[in-house]
Amino acid sequence: MIALDTNILARLVTNDDPRQTRQVVELIDAGDALFVPLTVMLELEWVLRGAYTLEKPAIVKSFEALLSVRNISYERQADIQQALLLYQTGFDFADALHHASSTGCLALATFDKRFGKLAVKAKLKPQVLDLNLK
Image 1 (cartoon, one colour):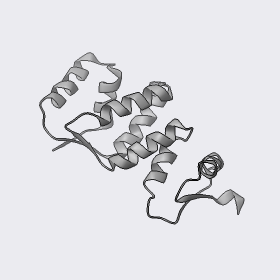
Image 2: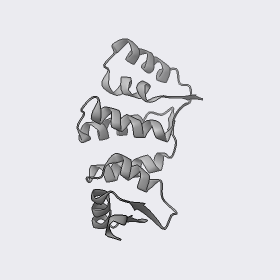
Image 3: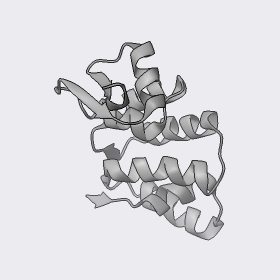
Image 4: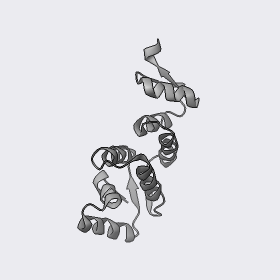
């Protein structure tokens, strides 16, 4: 199995370097089992939003396309999919991924007021504890 770094997926999504994009496509088309760590998906959203200034709908569409590639497996894919759902409703992707990864916990504590308000409104479980309110 070959693990993929953020820049590999960024090339595929943005095609900002056609030669490197071709190399990534060839790697995928070779059919070998590929793996994407959870941290790569977290960084990829940040890179696409920050460095490439992609809007949320384009990022979601890109992630959905990546998640559908047959020979790529993702660490905690269900958490990534859950985070994408929350991301589409206004959550920051990182916060949504932190929450999705907290399944089995009693709560997720934060000082992020916006995250806390969104979580209460969405009635997330586990609940998000905004420590600013304490």
